Image (cartoon, rainbow, N blue to C red; front, side):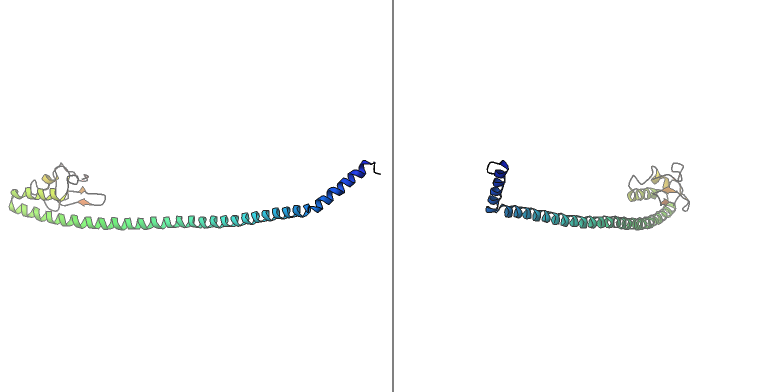
Length: 180
């Protein structure tokens, strides 16, 4: 039996196991495996927590994205309403201003008609002062009072998309519908 190799292998194995037990290797291996399992468990918990947090953020940003679209639509609608109101107010204001100026010019035409040709230059100068050169058609100051025109005949000159000057006859140089 002492000469058999299997016997000595068995004895070496038993001695090896006793050495392992003496140095508490199984306990160390078990502790290392438990520590590794605990680390993996913590990593899984952290990953689960991060996933839930990411899902919450995604939901929050999707909600904000929907709200931004609605807010943008509301802002655009509000701006459109304000622009329409301002345009309407501007149209009314411009119309009133033109009516005032037209009334004044009609009065000046009547005065000039009664006083003579010398005051035509004053009326032309007043028209030139009220409108800058880009607003007055070429020849318009001269065309207003060339030969004592009738007051109610239309000049029909456009001052914009919704305003027309309709106060006096004009010579052939200014045609109805001309843009100023």
